[in-house]
Image 1 (tube, one colour):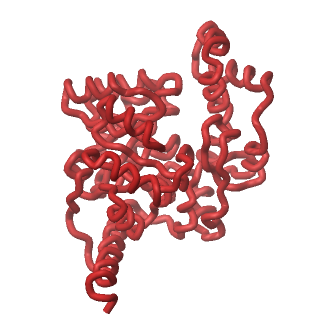
Image 2 (cartoon, rainbow, N blue to C red; image 1 turned 135 degrees about the vertical axis):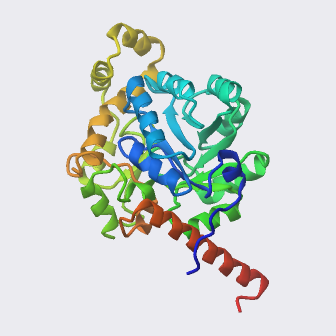
Image 3 (cartoon, rainbow, N blue to C red; image 1 turned 90 degrees about the vertical axis):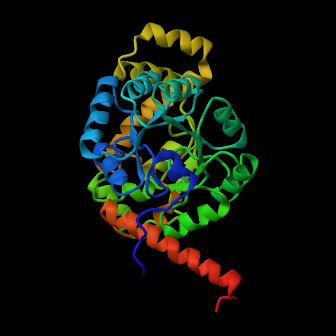
Length: 359
């Protein structure tokens, strides 16, 4: 296998000023400063997960990343969730180069990032409608997330979604997410019209990742295949893909009863230090939104048991179908170099097939 080139030029590498078109998405308790910096130092772009963080913790994490790397990085913010806007404001104050937004309107983020320091906005989308809205709100690029992805992918596979949005929005750089874990995936994504890939599950199973060692070993053992996941909305209120286990099957079996959801809403609010007087009106006037937030809050404990403690018997782990492609726990830099070399080989094979008849 030939050595990887020092850089690859795509619209994503030009936009984000990175060497390789490979993105670490923000994954709670996994995409921490150590992993973010490792991916950015390796030539990709690491995105910090801010979901579990308070604004002071977010600020501290951003500054820790800067102490570990001088390369571009980003932060992720799920705008539907409590505290997300406050964390986004911290990122803007800290002039984080890239802000990855999802599940909400980020026009104010784009306006400030663009106007105050030339920052870029990457919007995570799962369909054409959301892509259009994100572009109109000022997104510089889209992270197009297919059905294969861990956590909250859409209901359309990457094989269809990526080329569809690439054709519909040819002027917008795309990052393909969902089902990508090696160089063949990167080469495929480029062929489909993307300008880069995000590899959440793959980067989760690396030495620098914050994921519990036990979970890394479960995935890398090869015992889990691409078929060993579940997809549904009963776990945390939003359609999500998780590792198949007895506990995840139980929780995915059906939605929680109304009294349980209300209890979860109050309990989630308490854990996030949100006054109950702010929750009660939401339950009355914004039931659908509060129902999702309540379920998501209740799911946090299960996620932490697996992700932080490595307890798959009592916890639930977000994982993509790409777990079937993962068979080791490498260092991030070694992994990135391997991905680029594999992509070069896959591209050369494709060229030979179509231009030289495979000879």
